[in-house]
Amino acid sequence: MEEIVNLFHGFATVLQPFNIMVMVIGILLGVIIGVLPGLGGANGVAILLPLTFSMTPTSAIIMLSCIYWGALFGGAITSVLFNIPGEPWSVATTFDGHPMAQKGKAGEALTAAFTSSFVGALFAVIMITLVAPLVAKFALQFGPAEKFAVFFIAFCSFIGMGKEPPFKTIVAMMIGFALASVGLDSVTGQLRMTFGFTHLLSGFDFLIAVIGLFGIGEILLTMEEGLNFRGKAAKINARVVWETWKELPRYWATSLRSCFIGVWMGISPAGATPASFMSYGIAKRMSKSGKNFGKGEIEGVVAPETAAHAAGTAALLPMLSLGVPGSPTAAVLLGGLLIWGLQPGPLLFVEQKEFVWGLIASMYLGNFVGLIIVLTCVPLFAAILRIPFSIIAPVILVLCAIGAYTVHNNTFDVVMMMVFGVVGYVMKKCNYPMAPLVLAIVLGDKAEEAFRQSLLGSQGSLGVFFSNGLVGTIMMLGLIALFWPLISNGWTWLQSRTPKAAM
Image (cartoon, rainbow, N blue to C red):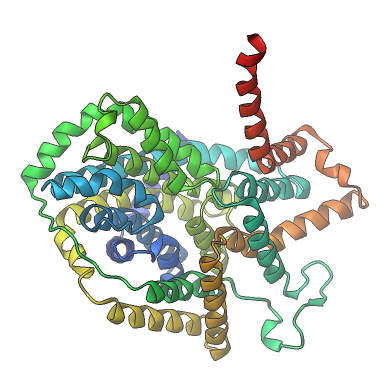
């Protein structure tokens, strides 16, 4: 009941005129970012983060989260009309969305995609409303050892349960740890790895790193690949929306199943892309129309879009309640909270109630407003793809440079942004994931601090991480997550051996 009262207070905060304005602006910017292939929600939030420096933390996080929602919606437009996934999780949407557009049903496909995205996000936000406060209350009992155990399970989950090869994930994470350790040691007060550069006394700024890694790196890669868009026209009117909405309830089981898949994959670091593929695959197997999947089946649009949006939204649950992001975009948002002096985690629900519940309320309203905007402005957003990328790319580069410079009003930050951009480009070319690197930059020093405080309290004994049931259980879950591929393969091998043994 207390959560419901707090949620209504959050709605009162969000419904202030300025916050409604930043919400609409954020969604419009997010849809544009989602429409541009490859740019993505994490890149967009990183590039536009400096725009929010003059806002209050609540207004800033509302705008950034709405950029995220908008990007999630926008990815479906290019998937359906151009057969180009604007986001990685929109790949599965192309399987049936674009064939529907080729049959002249682009309006139906887009309506189904947007509505399913809204349903998935709404389900995840309800879960955040009900579950996140309980998790936060439980986490208030944590000491340094328990805090490190939570960081440990986050790092292990990225290695063992992520979609990238574990070796590449570990390498990316190690680079992030090395970058996070530059500057003043928070425990001893000594300088580390500054190499005499006074600009590095406070370490690498998180914002400079993410703008370079995500923004510049993606632009360089896109410029190299070149883009040529040829798509289908889209017309959405009230009749098309109404007829599609009347058909969607037939797929309630697929929607509900995709919601649960998405929430689970979002809370774990697996993310929206595996959630969309898993949901599509299961829907294809269980549907009566499974043989029509890939030929323009509307259920093939409902399943991946519902799961992807649920996963993208649910990734904020561990970020808010434990301070551990569940996706790259959540990691960027977490960095933004730290810039504004807010510490994500259980204390956030106690010390910054207005902020937390304002954010959760904005998730409800932001997705509703986003649904209306995308349903009414599809032709406008689709026209963006007809602007030559040679015009769009310099604009984004200038925005990145301005954003990096405004962090400390220092040209050194712009240089570092370009360096990180080249690093991001090389990592993308070599298929190294950047989410673990960002996670390590954001959480590396905090994990180190908790680890060292735990050892100081136990006089150097590692047994402190298994000294009680709570910390021991979290550490064991972390080890299971770390070795999950081996455990999963072993279980599969045992199952394959069982029938032979019986014979």
